[in-house]
Structure formats: C-alpha cells, structure tokens
Amino acid sequence: MTSTNTDPRPVAYSWHGWVTVRGQGRAFASGTVTGPYGYCRARALRDIGAWLGAHGCTGRLADIALMPANPSTSSRSA
Image (cartoon, rainbow, N blue to C red; front, side):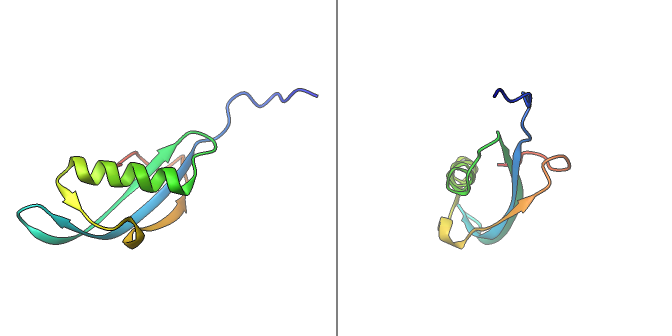
C-alpha cells in the first residue's frame, strides 16, 4: 500500500519562559517555532535554545514551557 499524502502538515509549538538577556537582566520571552512533520519537542527546545543564544539570551531549557500550536496560524520565531 502506498500513501497518497505527499505534503504532511508541519508541526508547531508555542513557547514562553524567563531568560537572562546579556547586559539587561531577566526578561520574559515567548514565541512560536515551526518544523517539518515529525518535529519533536526535544528538537524544538534545542532550536529555541539556539535562537535565544544567538540573540544574547541564556536560560535553562527546563524552564521553557512548550505547548502545541496551530501551524497554519503561527510564524517561525525561533
């Protein structure tokens, strides 16, 4: 049997948490991250951590709350 579904839906997560911004102190950050079909929570957290680090923020990924989001209405922030 062959699947006819050639365009699986993307996966999206909304996230929020407290981070430390270099030179500024603590701040509340939030956003949405979208990935391909099969995008898992662990990969989403790594991508969020990389994005935060690239923007001068540090924090513990364990402090980031991650919730499923609707990929058709979300934009990639991380």
